[in-house]
Length: 120
Image 1 (cartoon, rainbow, N blue to C red):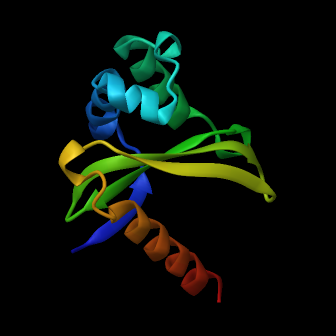
Image 2 (cartoon, rainbow, N blue to C red; image 1 turned 135 degrees about the vertical axis):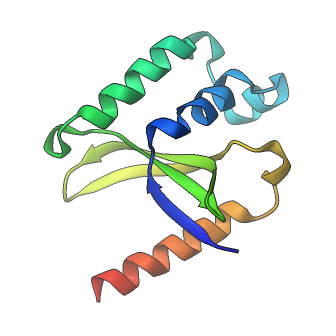
């Protein structure tokens, strides 16, 4: 299995948007999503476009696409970024058939080892 993490790209927008707008009631409750605060598809697309256009030094959030064998299957949002200090991150699996299969843990273990290798 080929695992990669890369910046979210315009071709990923539909998967991102469909994930949020297609959550079941059970998923909404499990994730604690305030569904009344989820923006429309148009607004999400506009926000994602603005995020990609923002200069790196002004970013306070960032979205990464998580891919298996070249297919984007989820995203992680890096939020509350304080450059060179901290941020928070978690993974959202877009494909329901891949949820609960341990892929999230694999991505985070793989990514952590990638950072370790890159920093040495």
